[in-house]
Length: 498
Image (cartoon, rainbow, N blue to C red; front, top):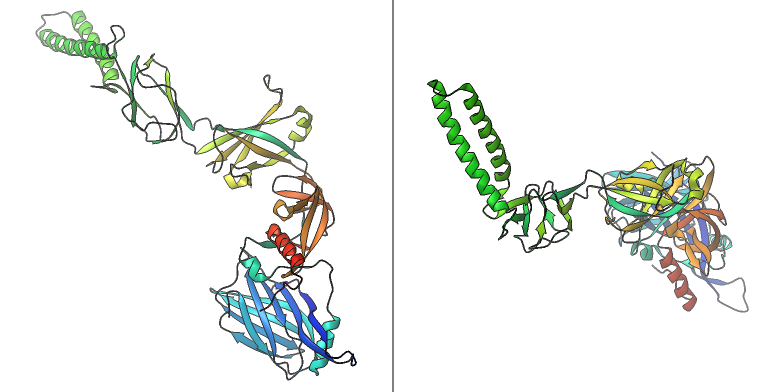
């Protein structure tokens, strides 16, 4: 099934030299090429062809690029068909001569306006791409002159070959309109989500003993793992070891008394009241002893991690005295985080229509909120008494690239019904306060164009002038195209030769 394609046909004269100063009608056509560009759902096809004349073989170099990552098609079959009316010629090649480049020879049989169509098969997929229309001539010399006349001279055009673009991070895309409302740029604090953090507290007062020499912030811990112990040491008062021994002695004594009184009660030698008192004493002693023995060992009270996670804070040191109930450590699961963004009061009206957000990561890149399966969980209606700002809380899952306790850039996006032109920020080049993009003339030739920009959400920027919807621009790798332009300025003979 054929795809709807944007065909592009450009005829270019690469080099033209006079063979005689006396005979201006005589030319030595060193290299005249026709250029064809087509796009499918998955592939970009860019072809360079010799001018087409009946009875003469024309070489066509077909460059095939994956649109998903703009890498070359390394394996596959390409068929080129030249169709004139209801007749045509075709040739199929089974593989590339170099990664992404397929060489095809076609010998037209009929003159006239024709279509060039490419069928590409790879990895169980097939796509038909229209290359565009072209005129086939009966005379080769006439075909050369026609190609020369179609040549479009574009001042400042930059050559950036497919081989160059395949070797770097590069992509192009169409300029499109999107709904893009006002954006609030602010800073957010990254916090552990409520319920994703646990505090380890001392179950008894005493001296801290940390058995492991590797217990530091950031170490992974498991639920039930002993992180530290609270011991009595040589303390005279409130000694946890002494308390444990007392509790055990009381438990054992009350158990024996209860057993003895139970036997006497069977023989009616003690009253029911004495039996109940002995039973209650035994139960109280058993509860107190059981509570201490759950975490007590020969080293003292074991303080165990309540959850799986990472030690985010160690609040005590070896040998320090702690009270019962004192916080010893904080364990974070880092499964979800909350970002608290502070917004100035002047944006209060915009927050009513807050819809989305983009977040800055520790490596300096920006990601949309949906990349974290995140959501905006609250927008304050009153200013915070300490900051005099309006807090906005955003919950994210996983938190890849976000560091708890750190700060991050936050772009809060509000809604609108008005579509505007937008481009990726990676497509913009800034020079002395002015912004430029590289507009594609064909996949190996680009033109630098100044644009006027509006607001940005950290990932995309509004274009207020200089571009039209549907134009194709460099969206990734613009810096490399700029470097190629500088190299072209230094070497006027630099170009593309297969």
